[in-house]
Length: 420
Image (cartoon, rainbow, N blue to C red):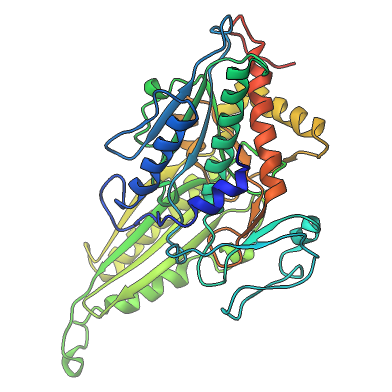
């Protein structure tokens, strides 16, 4: 049977970057390329109901062992797309066996992966490290999660056939499109998926378990100016470009991603464009605290009001699009999902890393839709860019975590939560 990293090496070569400017689901038709390959592979390893729907959601189930039908159905999810932040096409993964802990030159790109910049590399000494060639991202976010789920599924099914494995409840698998642009879980059919509890496999270090995410939204200011010949513009010109600059200057200067950490929220301007006649400022807004998140959105609305009072009604139009909420609010009644994984990770010789993620996952949306769904690490680091890296051994560890989660919930025959 394949190891998870061997699957990853195959998956990352398939171009699946989502398109943030698209209005369709999936946002890019190329996401179907990986989805169809996964359906074929799922069928080959024995998942009989594997299929992909018209929206590029891949589904499959492993039936419960005889006599274990009442155990809670546990699901595992990962996403097909890679981030549009950096090139995800023509990925050429590089393998560094027995990594020595030193600097790695990333192909001919001129970029160097160094332990000084990425201290986690020191923990990968002696392992098989997988990197980019410096010209693309790797795509371990989240093709590593896919590979780990697929590998765990293959091993469970093989043990079922041989009669050598532990009995288990129903196992539900799904791979989703467009997580990187904030809409990955929106159209997942929860009834078809069939899980009572689930985990996304979409985090960083292999010992990570995340149940606190940001509250998140996108905000866009559209500015409509009045373009008059500059020689005759006194008291008549309204320069949309200058108003865009004023919007940026009104934001708190130290509440940006580069100045914040841990539970601190931020405003992140992602683009500024425009002319005298028309301009736009786009940003994302994040905060772990629901109250502070609401206050940030109110700040933006107040800015819109002030600018329209200064330049005329209709000059500035603010649009806010909600993306996801902090799933910690909803997981307080299902903390066994976190406690069980902590126990598993300790039993495998590592100390669990339970920390807030400065981002979000499909699990945040799913939790608010009624499916409790914290997030597991994948073993990777430096996602969304050319320094992305992951080790084969870290991926093996995550496969073990997934299989032990399945075992943990198999004993809950009465359907109650397993919290011991």
